[in-house]
Length: 106
Image 1 (spheres, rainbow, N blue to C red):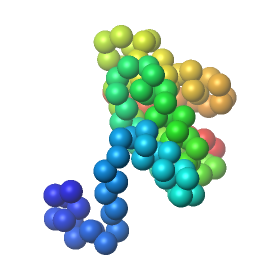
Image 2 (tube, one colour):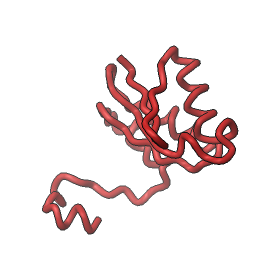
Image 3 (cartoon, rainbow, N blue to C red):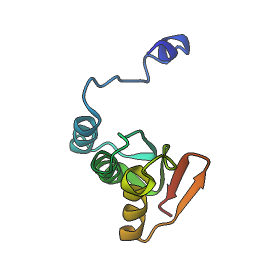
Image 4 (cartoon, one colour):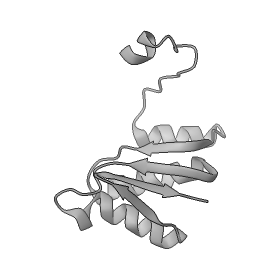
């Protein structure tokens, strides 16, 4: 919030004091959509899987989802496993840049 105040964009940013899962569900209920969504889930599979799938419901066609912690200890048990499985199910391609992953839906 310090950055929001410092950048003088308090009229454009709405803080939502909920957990990620609750916030994503609430945004979906409100009909909010987005072109770009960052996923900053927990490092375990279930957390990442849940956040990725909830966020995808908000993503406009042609939108982009991205996150970090793709290459960590337990690679195939956490974030990377969730990202790869999601991409496989939806026929999407995962791009990586260092620790970051990116999925373009177009």
